[in-house]
Image (cartoon, rainbow, N blue to C red; front, side, top):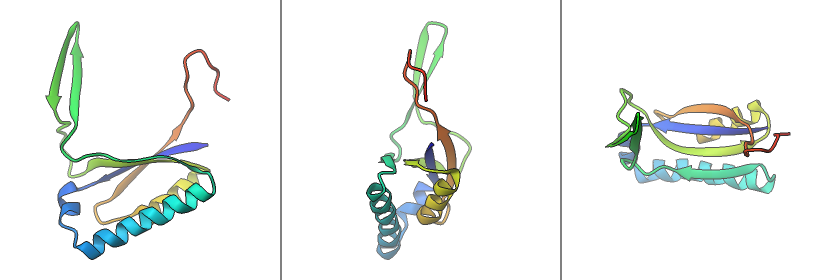
Length: 119
C-alpha cells in the first residue's frame, strides 16, 4: 500500500534553526530517502515553498483567488513524502523525519485513473 506523509510545522521556528540543527534534520531526511530509494519504496518527495500558497474558491460561476491559505494554526503544510509499505513503515518514517513543532499526517493512497479499476 502507498501512503502519503504530510509534514506540518512552524515555518517561523524552522527559519530560526541553527546551522547544526538544519544539517542534522536534513541529514535524517537524506538518509531516509536513500534507504527507501534502495528498497524501491519511495515516491515523490516535495518541500512546499513558504508563503507561496493561493486558495481558489468557486461560488456559482465566479472564481475567487486569495493569498493563503490562512487558517488558525501554528503549523503550515511544509512538505510531503509518498512511501510504499505498511502503515507501521510510514510511522517509522515519521520517526526519522521528526523535528520540534513537527506534526505528521499519514493517509493511505489509492491509485486513481478515470475509467481504470484500481487493483
